[in-house]
Image (cartoon, rainbow, N blue to C red; front, side, top):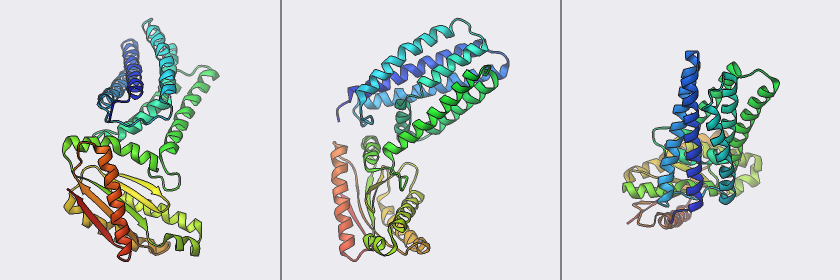
Length: 345
């Protein structure tokens, strides 16, 4: 996979903007009184430095061609960030002029407004996939909410400033919703098909680098059409949400589950013990069969392909999906409520 230069440019701009933000907040920390406010600005600076560190890590992966292009219009995103950057640089200059408390919060509010650009949210979600020790999305939720709370306590003097806080809060929540809608299945709240493939690309490259066994699982609900015909589509939707919840319950945070289409789900395990896969399949199947009795008793069929990835992870994953789908078909042919596994050499 070749490096996507537009994605590299976007991540680089985000890194530069957050680096400037860290410097601005460090300046405010040096000037601030009382101690509570000094600590607040210091924490804000430290968090922005962490964000810049995320982008630095992503930039390295993007330069190696490991990351997918997650933006529909990357050139437009680049242009928008290029417009934001000089505005942030202006704020950097203003922060060096020893502003008072009120002016500091106004500068910070503009800065946080700029970092609410959807590019940041989309990249936080991407970082979430490959971050083992941290939760970037959750961290930024804490970051923006703490800022707004302190702004309310120290920076609000006019109705216009109060409106500014409300605007920043509303924009952040709206960006979260838009990001989820673009990558998640609205019915089951797992990844949609497009989001799933974007999610597993970096994980497959990391698995290759770490020489980890991976697995792809295809799963669908047996006789789902008949269930819809007899019980109605509303009950069918409830059943789809139920199965999605069961799958999320039985996998780790590092595993990926998506809705492949209709009643078919797809799962990717970026690091797996192949000896445990038959047990996992039985566990999922038995759980769904037992717990579904409160809705409509159902069974599921599964097909799994597992093994090491070769030099071209994206093509290897596509092939594993085809093999897992073939295994799923064999499970159906054997009478449904079956598991079929294939070990890719």
